[in-house]
Image (cartoon, rainbow, N blue to C red; front, side, top):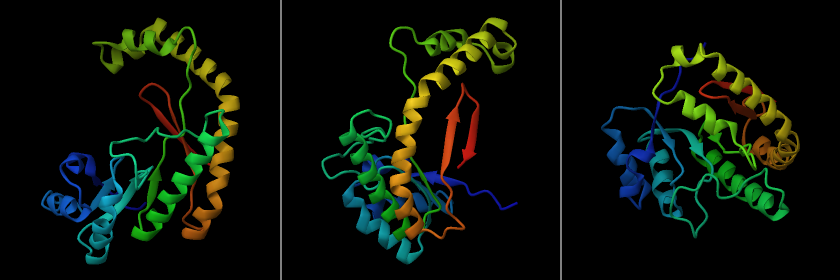
Length: 208
């Protein structure tokens, strides 16, 4: 089993900088070997980040979509465009900006991209709100033994999976649109496309 990589997120100081090199210089003294580029990497950061890679100041382990941010955006915006939206233009923008992220990831030799691919929403009643109210002020052992809580979670998962069928088709189409570029930029033996499912503080990852 390979040794896990622990990366320091740039969210700890990115708001104080406009230059990527100066930002990473601030992070060096924390003692980490790897960094995680979070959702606030503006276009002005890119020359400095490339210099960081050239000088081997630190290694970039992971990158959050979108990186770099679109030129007119200066704040964290991981949900700026969504691959599950019914509007085709929105999905095309997601593909375009995600392709830019793949290009940059290849340039800096990062291991992975973290991309938000959507949520399941409810029009009238959202069972998630009731679940959060039940969880308030209770530890995991206590709440997981609560029968009402367990029934609500099971009911929520069934509803979410039912509603996600159409949504997942759109997400899959968008992922298929960026896979050729990912294969071009990354060795096929290293390429993995994953789906991460969050189910109330538990996570399951399926590789496809």
